[in-house]
Image (cartoon, rainbow, N blue to C red; front, top):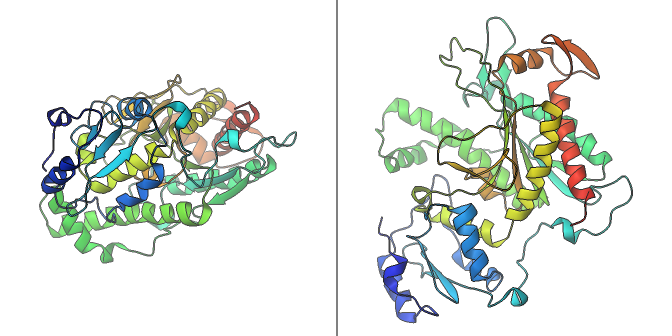
Length: 414
């Protein structure tokens, strides 16, 4: 992929027109991640003069592309930024607001807490539109998506079914607090109409792009991955962005540690929790036109501060409810953001495609010994003796912790 060095362009106070022609000449052919559509770069025009140069650079360097992964694709001048697009499409010029006082509103369908006004006593979520996204598929699809394991003759653990149960428990809790609540799925199984056998051509392109051998076994595995991990998320994104249009999305998940041989999985003593918001795009990810575009869309729509504040409130509430320690990433795929040790920024397909604040909630290690016993105990009201002590249902503990975190966030002044 042909890149460019922003410093070599010697941009001063503006971007000369001659550079537009130069960038158009060296821009590569459209390179898209699997199943992505070619971006409509002109749609970013609505963000003209909606951000200052200082804020733009802060968000790039501190949240969205730390480590300079953005620099081969974005040249920042004093008054505007020149953004590499796709072959055949002119570079996009983003004009900055000269000062904080001249910032134009960033158009979006979601509302910040500060835009919602006063709420009735006891209804801190009144009028807040919340979409719950129960992670994965569950049911007969759980084995394919590798969110299934079984210890001996005990009932299998299937993450997609567990997240759906948590979502169903959350709905009445959030509604009682005044929220409008929506689900991206209401039963086990996919929302996308596509199936692996209709994605074999795309799987071949994906394997070629990754420079991996295109064998029958590889095609089968990649077709399945594109079905449950890519096509499914794209379909849920359509529901979020076009139909539901919520103020925030909660992506509900359980975590896991490696369990070894799938035929003979092992349990672990590790148990922890973390939350994820959008960010930490790597240079190798930004080579894809659609990822570069969606990163800018998230940055310019200013979801970061809302995501961070919501995540910190939910993290504090869940930490109190569960007693779990924070998980810490050991790789550069995520960065810690804000003041909570539980909150990290990471580039995931859903949190970059959903065009509103998105919180990934990842409590509990489902193959830890303590959590395994609690899942086997199922859902129940009140407390029971589980794993040697009186405990609430793990699913209700999860739902209660999230609900309390949201209620506290929306109860406080902006």
